[in-house]
Image (cartoon, rainbow, N blue to C red):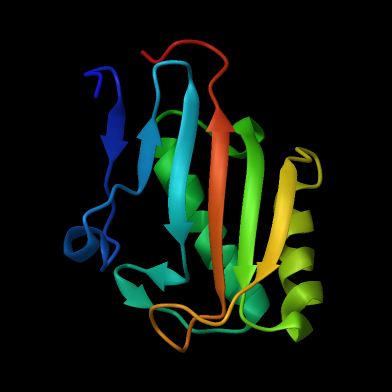
Length: 133
């Protein structure tokens, strides 16, 4: 793979064990952020679905910030949830964070995550719009 690809890690507890990067930036300015959950300072923060969504997106924003990007660069989000009953809470958190940005978005119901206390996982794609520095 090209040396122009940038890979960013975080304090996520599974990155080393599973072998992935928190974010990958491609030479064309596309940034892919891996699935983020409600992990704060390396520890699961299993709050409400709304709180977990905010925490998960904050982890994604932290990765973007490391690359010099912000929420305004987000062009796509994916929200994975374990219960249909959480659609409104997760959607409310997404609207608060992205109402002005309006990325393409998906919300998908899944059977579960790596830890049963987690009910939300998010993925983010961002676009720099110019070549990386």
